[in-house]
Length: 192
Image (cartoon, rainbow, N blue to C red; front, top):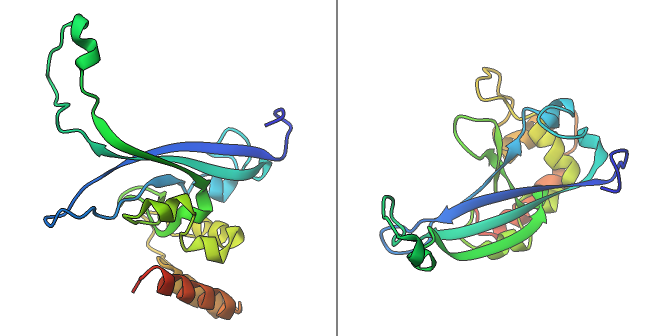
């Protein structure tokens, strides 16, 4: 930001996750938690340094790594061997992308109110910002997540983009264009 009164601040979140493999040795899909949808997305000020509408962009600096099994817990090294101490990570890949472009349509964890990233095992989708909201746009991302049901809520109008489109249509909005873009996105990314 230029100063605290700047209304075009840039928010930067640093996120990490690690790769795991399935029994066939293929990398499983991974994801990130991208911040709470039940705080500043709803009231504009909770759990954020400045009001939400003071930010022009929200970026994620994401690190994807493989756990280094050689860096086990409890190993003791003398200080003169510090250079030989194995780090607990390897094969690090980094990306920088706008949050909404890598957001998925589901929470990032089962028992918290965090936006989940688009789950993939292809980091290029994250590098290039190819989540579903990349074709739906920032306003749809903000509206979707600011209305997403809270974890303990008994009223759940929608919990997926398809349910969101239906909910909006029931409230008089034309979703044909967005539904078309989302179908195209699913086709391009092999989503069923």
